[in-house]
Image (cartoon, rainbow, N blue to C red; front, side, top):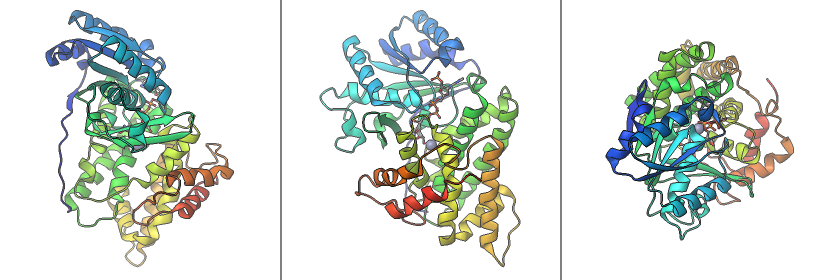
Length: 395
Ligand code: NZQ
Ligand code: ZN
């Protein structure tokens, strides 16, 4: 096990009806004026936004609002939010939605906290935020783990570049997680969420360091629970226990727990971010689902025993001691079949991506020649293109 330094200061307030405490909670923290930030309308339709406003009014908290965050959130909206926070002298941002709304809020918090710096400089690594306006969240979609993570991912729509960066300023102060708020998430987004949650753990599990028995068992247990809950939520969207398992697993999967003591680089995430950066209509979870099995088949020969362990412990595949690669491949097939059973794409052709753009995608993924991606196999541009190509044909 490698050394680690863990601190997850986000307060999680989990369960039925907890969103009603929003106003009182914000008052306890001592904030005076809040930016309510939300997406394209689901929180208006469900009545959640109205309830939150009522709760703030009851607690005597002033607010301004900014809706319209799109899935795969964009820089233009972030800039709008920064301006609003500054002119209205907002001292806290309340994100009400999924990962896109949370990430947009985190970026606004960075930008408004440091008005002299261009917020995109943080995403290109040119600068680091010193101050920030804190973010609290009411989560409505179990997927990204943003409610407990230090990441924020934003697309510069003019450049077609999707970039993430980690910062302590992104750690939400609190996240209210009521699984009932996810009952209205449709089949497709539930599938995307299930894939993304699994992937945050799988990407850590398939890092390159060995000897992490406790972390392995935590990861394998979480994956089994998510597979079971994902199946149930797909069939019965109002199953509270399944939605609760997905929601809590979503937070645990990306807060560092399932990778503690391991070295990893989220290669599939890096490959996917270029995809949804260049094709904003592609949901993050769908992009991951279309890429993962091809990535896995590509790197598996370098460490088949690891993939075989995954197959045996997570998918109950029988170990073939004569040929561990066969066991490993059976685990990859089982994962792919599970994604398909949720209606998720398992090829780039299904997503109508143009193969002639793979070169550009890989070029962007290398940060224009500035990086390779370390992992079980280190990926350079040529290898990235090969994985995109492998992922293209419909299965
Ligand atoms: O915009 P509205 O109308 O709210 O609709 C949303 C959106 O269309 C809808 N939705 C959300 N809650 C709902 C609901 N519909 C019905 N009922 C509800 N309760 O779902 C759609 C997708 O929402 P979005 O927030 O985009 O999904 P998700 O949570 O999967 O977030 C995806 C974004 O997070 C980034 C992704 O790259 C992507 O941009 N990620 C962020 C991470 C982080 N900050 O730690 C890590 C992840 O790996 C990921 O990269
Ligand atoms: Zn993800």
